[in-house]
Every structure is written in C-alpha cells, then in structure tokens.
Length: 204
Image (cartoon, rainbow, N blue to C red; front, side, top):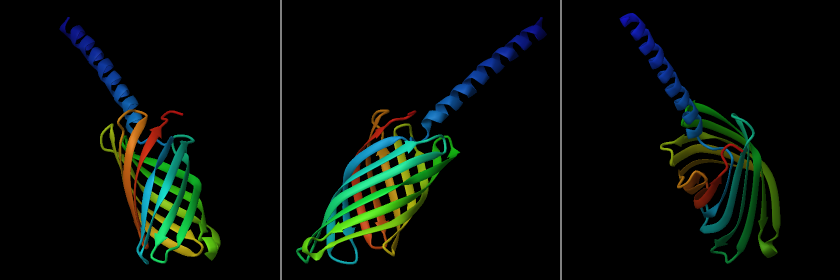
C-alpha cells in the first residue's frame, strides 16, 4: 500500500515538474531579444577632426526571417554646421542582413553585414555620392523583461575611408510593443548620441 502511494506521488511529482520545465522553456523563448521592429529617433553627431557637429533624423528597422537570420536597414537624414559657414546635408542608407546566436535564453550574440550608401550635398561646393560596406558584432541582453542592454563594435569602409566604432544602447520596454531607446557610438573620427522610440512586432 505504502509502495503504491509512493509510486503515485512520484508520478504526480514527475508530471508537475515536467510541466514546469516546459512552461519555463516556453517562457524563455519569449524572454530573448526581438528581431522584428521599427525605430525612429534623433541623433547628434560630433566630428573630432574639425570643429563641426550635426543633427539627424534616424530610422532603423529589422525583420526576423527565422530563429537565426534577420534583415536590417537604417536611414539618416541630417545637416552639419561648421565654422566655415557652410551647411552640409548628409543622407545615409544602410541595408543588409544579420545572424544571431543565443548564448542563453536572454542573451544573444549578434553579427551583421551591410551595404552603405552616403550622399553629401555641400551646396555650391558640389555633391558627393559614395558606397561601401559595414561589418558588426555585439551582444543583446535582456537584463529584465523590460530592460535591454546592447553593445557592439562596427567597422565601416565607405569611399576608401574606414572607421571602427564602439556602441552601446539601452532600451526600456514600457509595454510589450513600445520601448524608449538611448545610445551612443564612439568612432575614430565621430561621436554620436541618440534617443528614439521603438515599436516591436514579436512573432511576425
């Protein structure tokens, strides 16, 4: 009788434990970073080589193809003010793809390769259009279900001018869909600060 009861308790415990593990695994799959989103924001750029800075409208997006691959894109449209009283308009478009690898349920290693095109309009001084490429790698980590911290390193080569930059970004997801973002990028010649609003479309 006692042996039979113990067996029943063991079966019940195993069933409950199995259900808990499955529930945790399902929850963990929803705790990782999201790769389908749109973001709009403001960016301020400071140029280290000469006394100039600029402001830009920044748009960014990503679309998850599956659990490993995603498409990426960004667009910036801004102007640069310098001591030479010359206003320079700069437009940059970046398109490419990325791969992400989970290190644990809430932390991903991310990489990407992009094509970059830049259009510079200096008024009477002329226009310049250049193409190049970018490589990036970093970490995306959900510190809590609402707080995400990203960091990475990027290498760009446009018009035979290359730059290596380190970046950091923090996101607070105040709902499942919307998040406030703030970040910085420090490169060889430029320093950028930005804030934005992100809309997440998890599961699309």
